[in-house]
Image (cartoon, rainbow, N blue to C red; front, top):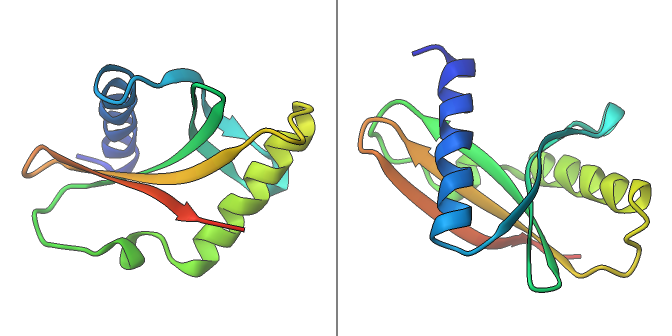
Length: 118
């Protein structure tokens, strides 16, 4: 499976998981933030905005969270989140950044809450 296809499949599976298992309302997907990048999933639960970075893998080999999303990537995601909040006039909205992984070989999802704090 090509990386782009695997990424799209992973995002579909994680979006369904967020709605059905976590009770999130999905607000947007693949939100383009200009030069700041893209936000995979933007969701809401109660009054909390939840930004979900999705990573999909095809092999069953173990990869820890820090190998999947390093400090540089988290910094870029933080800039994209700030851009989204500014563009949508959500200045005081509480938010968090989560990471969801999907492994195609094992069909497993792992979900990590709040991987970034300011």
